[in-house]
Image 1 (cartoon, rainbow, N blue to C red):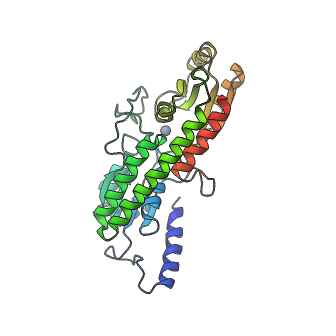
Image 2 (cartoon, rainbow, N blue to C red; image 1 turned 135 degrees about the horizontal axis):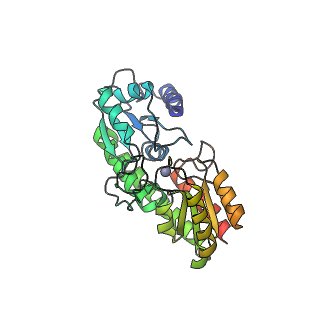
Image 3 (cartoon, rainbow, N blue to C red; image 1 turned 90 degrees about the horizontal axis):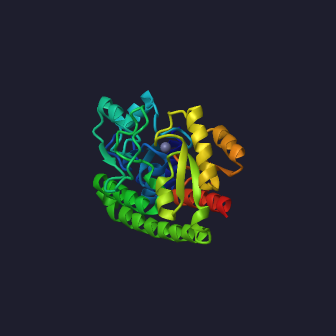
Amino acid sequence: MRRNITAALVACAAAAAAVLGAACGGDDAGGDGVRVVATTTQIGALVREVAGDRVQLTVLLAAGADAHDYEPSPQDSRTIRQADLVLKNGIGLDDWLDDVVKNSGTKARVVVATEGIEPIEGEAHDDHGHDHGEGDPHVWHDPENVKVMAKNIAEALADVDDVNAATYRANAEAYAKKLDDVDREIMALFAPIPPAQRKVVTNHESLNYFARRYQLEIIGAIIPGTAKEAQPSAQDLAKLTDLIRSEGVKAVLAEAEIDPKVAEQLAKDTGVRVVTGVYADSLGPAGSGADTIDGMLLHNARLIAEALK
Ligand SMILES: [Zn+2]
């Protein structure tokens, strides 16, 4: 779960060995290397882009874990209590954080990384309370939104650690340029695919931002709503089967985080392609090439474009 602590400690030990009195946090919160907690893998990855190893980062969600209904542990509460900065996604995705923050008694600053992003309106038809009509929280599937998140994170870091403020801002700007490059690369991947061939069904409603940016048409989702707890009824699936046939859907996109069984069956029944391994709610594990947001976006784009060709 907290795979980044070890990495940070190793980095700190190396830095301390190299430079006497290097900036690596001791036990008291006043020490160097501010303590940052990120809820999601996406925010964690952005902190790494913006701060490198200047901060002590803990990411609460492991790759592949469910952000929608994560249950924080007592250890999470202790980590948050000692933090200087807590970064959350907001838009209803990680509201479970709020109680831990309150109960931990932390003095950390809590910042919503998606501040300023206009969410796509949610369907608000899941009955588990995860979508309070705030909209679709999966904003990181559009590089333009990711640029906003990186900037917000840089400003939040600058606030708690003004010594490194210029570095954080410069890194966020450099990453924005990288995202622009990736955006162009993805545009080029989809450019040869005619509009009629861009119809897809997703597993849960997680790729709305990607679809809007790259002009894919999402005809339906297997799991209704932007949260994942709802189960489709036999009737829902029959309706979706009809839609796939009548609309000429090209592919069913199954996220890496969800058992693709239903998606595979649906694809089999309708004779369309199923794309497994799309990273939707979580980035990929370390070393997968999808453990950064730019890597994840390209990974997904290549998979999807290949299926639609
Ligand atoms: Zn989701």
